[in-house]
Image (cartoon, rainbow, N blue to C red; front, side):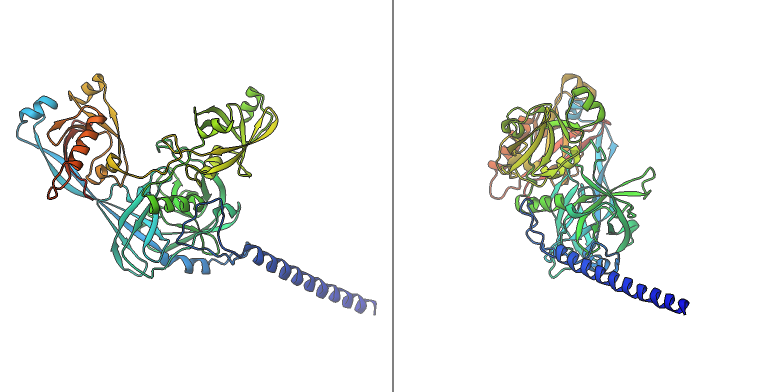
Amino acid sequence: MKTKQAFMLFGAMVVVSGLTAFGTVKYMSENMMNETEGVFTDPNVHNVGFVHAVSTASVTDNDFTRAAEMTVNAVVGIHNTQQIQQMQSFGTGDPFFDFFFGNRGNQQRQPKAREGYGSGVIISSDGYIVTNNHVIDNADELKVTLNDGREFVANLIGTDPSTDIALIKIDAKDLPTVAFGRSDDLKIGEWVLAVGNPFMLNSTVTAGIVSAKARSLNMGSRQLGIESFIQTDAAVNPGNSGGALVNTAGELVGINTAIYSETGNYAGYSFAVPSSIVSKVVTDLKQYGTVQRALLGIMGGNVTAQLVEKEELKVNEGVYVSEVTKDGAAELAGIKSKDVITDINKVNVKTMAQLQEQIARFRPGDKIQVTVNRDGKVLNFTATLKNTQGNTDVIQKKGIDMLGATFQNLTPQELMKYGVRRGVMVKSLESNGAFAKSGMKEKFVIVKINDAVVSSEKEIEAAYHALTSNRGADQEPVMFIVGVYPNGKTAYYAVDLSK
């Protein structure tokens, strides 16, 4: 009898426990659903105006089928074709080349095609596609292949090498899209999907978790490089670049950009540009043709234990300000060297990468609140961000900027090294600039433009203005350029300025 009573009591306890657990799960799921529903309308972020995102997924959702279905048709393959001009020598040199280059002999360009593949994400139904800058860099032709097999030739809208983001467009309508989500809301350990075309295998989906946020890879070669990557262990391989990183709601939270590998193939970790940065860059490219880069005007680094001891800092985390730019946003706001920045607009920043991610959301002229620790005191400053030219104006591409190049005047020793008597080096190129589109590469030394010898950037600018302002209605603005590369090869370029 006692045994029977004990069994009945145990059974009642099981039922009560089950009902309690069911009620708890139901209550939590309903509340979490209410918390995650809503439209992405962060007032502090310059959002992409032609996409909307509504999240209805619980943070405990680990069913990837819905997210995959919502994404695969909006991720495209991108085929980059470049015509490489190989130089072939023949005959002997003429007096012009003997004078400028020495007796190198006449040379003729032999075209050769170079092909590359990557991925992209459709973000508007009328054909705007976001991808990586390195996917479309120096392309003579961009071909986009949709998941249904249709192919389109794409036009380049703009690029931002600093974040490795590019915007292209195809002439199509009613395309499937991926909506932007909030990368800020990602949590370490949260499931994400990488969608792309690795090894030209279209519509490939892999899963992983967010391993870290605001990760810097120290890619120092990028000018004004902004590095605050989302790190995941989702498998990403060559061809995935420019593809989508989405959450389990199927929302775009990043653009897959890089992998950590010694072999060039996936070896455990991949990295994506957060959607908070992508949305700002894409909006700027669409509206202005160039990114409105906002600068706080500081130099510094992460606070470390050694720095705390050396500078006797009163805080163990943040961004140490080693120097402020004269008349920059930080100096004018009252921020000083040896301050430690701890918050931007009340968002905690522990590293320079996190600070860069916050600043990258804004445009010149925007005001932000900067919290610093100065000798143990917490101070708040309002800084008006500036552009790369030191003011708050919107930057539009115009004039010689259309060439998409920066130049370096050469010293007599450098001229001797290149084997020329006059010339100006092309220091850097933008992939959508007129020079890059002509096939020109960095380190090229320009010697002559349209029969005029050039030896300074001002002379290049003068040649540009003479060509574009004095031409007749029936004349095409074309720069005929002659120069030499570091390996001694001479090259000729016809730069069409009408495009």
